[in-house]
Image (cartoon, rainbow, N blue to C red; front, side, top):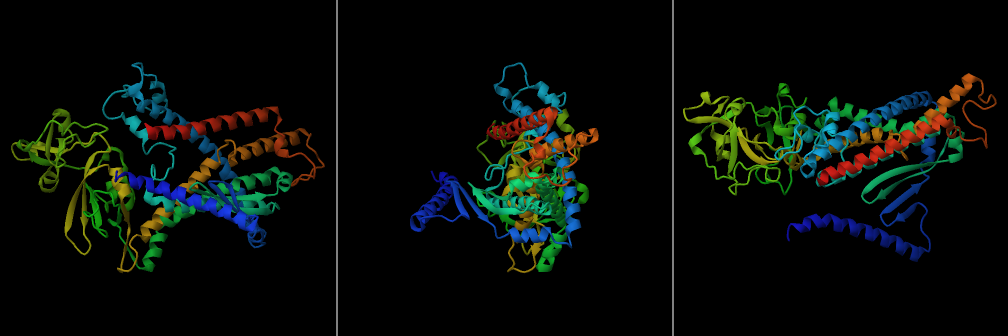
Amino acid sequence: MESSYPSLLPVLWFVGAWALVNLGFVLARLVCRRTSDSVELVSPLHVRITTRALNGAVEAIAQSPRIARVLDGFYAAGVFVGVASMVLCTGLLGIAAIQIAAAIGIRAGAALPSVDLWQPLVALAGGSAGYTGPAEGPEPRLGRRLAGDAQVLQPIIPGVTLPAGHLWHYLVALAACAVIHELGHACAAARARVPMRACGVFLLGIYPGAFVELCPRLVARASVGRRLRIVCAGVWHNAATALAVWALVRSGGLGAAFARAGWAQVTDAVVVTEVAGHSPLQGRLPLRSVVHRVDDVRLGNASAGFGATAIARWTGVLTAGGGRGSTDAGFCVDARANQDDGLCCEMSARFPLGESPDAAIFCFEMFARERLERAQSWCFDLRAVLAQSARCRTSRECLRGDVCVVPRAPYASGRALRLYYRAPGSRREEMLVYAGSPAELWLEVQVSSLEPRFAWLPLALPAGVETLLQYVLSFSLAFCLLNALPAWHLDGNLALKLLIAGSRRRQQADAGVADKQAAPETQADGQDDPADDLGSGGQLLYTVVGTSTTVLLVWCAAGSILLLAL
């Protein structure tokens, strides 16, 4: 019973908060007899705030003669980025659809008939000839890859696919990316002489967003080229934001700023800033500890792979499937110390650490090449072996009667890891053994590359800012690519329509049938919207591309959620 309360607490907070919001609007109507036009309760879970106070500021910035040419060139480049993103993301969406279909087939393979109907999908997704259809035991390599980090599209659900502790980073980054996106539309419209009528923000459930309102009549009068700039400006702003954040972090500018504020840069290790309360390492791994090695991967060694920095190598080791390359040598153990109880090596997806009730023992197997020659397993005391045994590459390097073994890990969710660290104020190296999911360890232990020089400085501030910037970078790229899709109700759909309309007008001009009385940059009052003139072939292309992209997007979203359930 006690474990059920924490899971219900966020739901109670959510329901209670929205109940108070709805109650506040009801009381406002009763007391004031009317509600403000700037704050509106659209639905019980949808609040919208609208303002016109920023109209003048956006207009002044966009029409400033000092940066007029810069903005024109900037938004002209945005059209190229928007179109390129449309093509790129459409291709990625097709790949993702095949990946998700193949992954669902592999996950659900045990329930399928003996005839393997999913083999064509696996082959299309780049599967190897080693795939032999549904079978018990570890998933095929392709299944792990498609359902894991290599999946192109993954659902973003706080508390499910994202750590619950990152909720505020998630919400702030999402709101910032939405505001930046809409600011792009507003500034590009102002440059096209289409003033902004209003702007605002909204909250739908727990998801924040932003919007701008433009005059439809003036938008319709703008030329196809100017409308393309307006449509692609949001995507372009998100792409520019992602590039700026990447440059800030990659160039070391963020670390330099914190260094001036009182933090020291740690280049060969990571500093522990937070350990989740439910983590088995809570109380065992002190805060401010400096972790410099995971298994045999030294975080300060650039040649170790897994990334260019210590933080990247920490992430790479813990999120790489199967922990490839993290162990360079085995451990010499007396084979007579075997404590096999018949359950220790019974590993499965449900019990990746084995089914033995004795948590102290762990299943071991031969190291490297000897594993192929001698497929045998033993059960030894895990911590005793990892802490005290001599290292080896073959059993011939060990004493007579000893075997060269490593912890068995057929499932990525069940591994034995060694963390080498120095406690705060100590120069002595200590080793901590962790048995479980490396991905959960990565989520439960927050680290940073910055260490405060003074005790009064907040330890978790640099890590918090780094995490926030990572979400801003990820969401900016997501806004850029997904909004560029030519699916219904997305920016890419209108951009596709304008591209087809612009191509048709150029063809008409070349054929000498264009309206010579029409202004080159705007349309006369009462004239039809040029974006509606697609021709029969253009209309067919627009409908087919828009519909097929929308279907693929819905399939990828639903399939990704289904993969979580499987």
